[in-house]
Length: 383
Image (cartoon, rainbow, N blue to C red; front, side, top):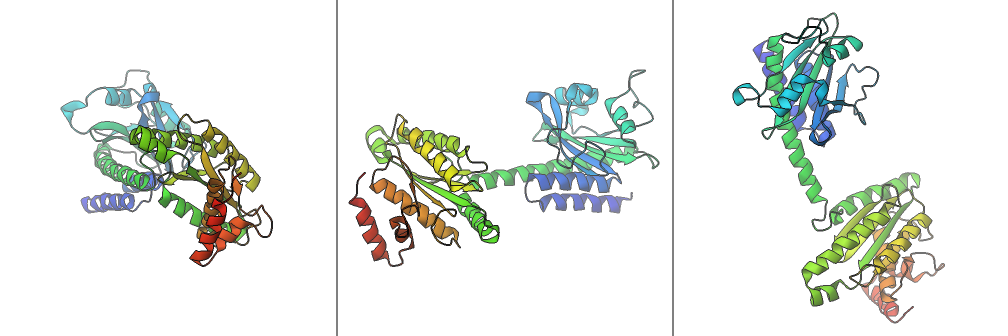
């Protein structure tokens, strides 16, 4: 490959990774771009999991054989099976610079191997009908991160030293792309995560709830929302300090996560202040109410605070058509308000008090004055 073509391939690889949305797309772009740049038939990107002492394959692209899924669940290899990787991971590479890529062929061990030693990569090439491979270590922030692997089929020219040198350049481009992808992932995580509790935040709920309600409109998927107001937080802040109040929020966040685990795929979130929610897409309304019951019970047992006011709204209950996320949220919020006003120890469920359900009436009240009347009426009731 001429210099111009190689430069074009490097640019294409960098652009492909820069355009990726999320880590998986970045991995696929890295492996695919390197495979095309080197004229390979197959490529893989793997990460070194230090704590487990293994290389775990993140993505396989190109002509895959049996057992080579695109995004494997658990395709991994003990590092000790690969002496050159062990040396790279645990010792300084020669010259203190970037480590160089190397070539293996199906014809036999690379130069420098001890007599009679059949390298794992050589065995793998033969087993999968490939003629050669080039392996390029990836270094990120001065530390070994993983490797880029590109192979060619039997019957085509094997990789040469020049290809290994080019693979070293490609691995540096991949490392830069991975660093960018990880920074973007972290930025996205922070944008959708509550810093104190580690739960999702209001922005994440808004996005997921819009998607869920659209699914409900299309195919009738059950969407349920539990809105919670943590009782007693102001008292704790005023009498014991905000550090203790933060601890209460963190502990309730853990309880919310635990109860949310009862509902497959549920999103546990802190909306802000002392307000939290659970968003469930798929489970029945009764399953969600059961989880909300458990949430109320566990919250009441917390050493700090005074339990939780909990409201539930589900498209499976008689609440009328739910055509927007906003309406479902208003219903759950109105149910929570009723629970708080009545000091209820169990969740209030929108739509379960018959055709004239006060929660539904409050949520759907158009004029602000009507909503205010309903709220005053709730305040006058006690359980």
